[in-house]
Length: 165
Image 1 (cartoon, one colour):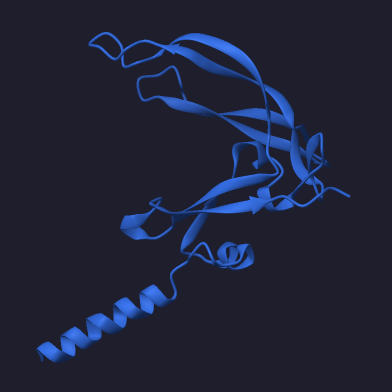
Image 2 (spheres, one colour):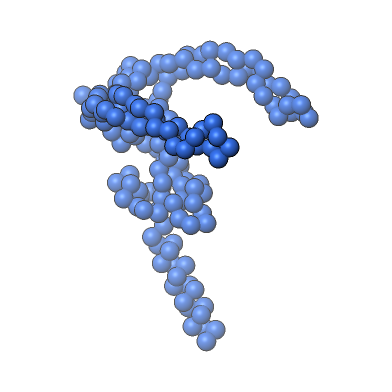
């Protein structure tokens, strides 16, 4: 009986390991894998990381993207009552648009931090504006989409944007 249990455990572990996602998998295979989540770079979220291309000066959507052009407020419950409620912004009109982002952009960066203390957890004391350029190649994080390991880091993989035509 012990041998049977050990063999069953080994077979289960082997089968799980043989189907685990890895950085060597193609992007197509990773995108089809329901056990992983691909965390898209912030700058590419509106157009979609796999719908983006790069030129010398900008990042662009390859295909037009469905974009909300008008919202309405929907009130649920009474936000001013003790029971509470909330206001939801619901899209009422969409338009297909090409998305363009300049590669060279300005960012606020912290230049001086307050030391951690009882009164501070180490907040930024001074900010500065710097010019940065979005890359053509992004290090993309792949995380687990399964049970107790949900959102646990699995690996990073380089996503290289194609040239815009």
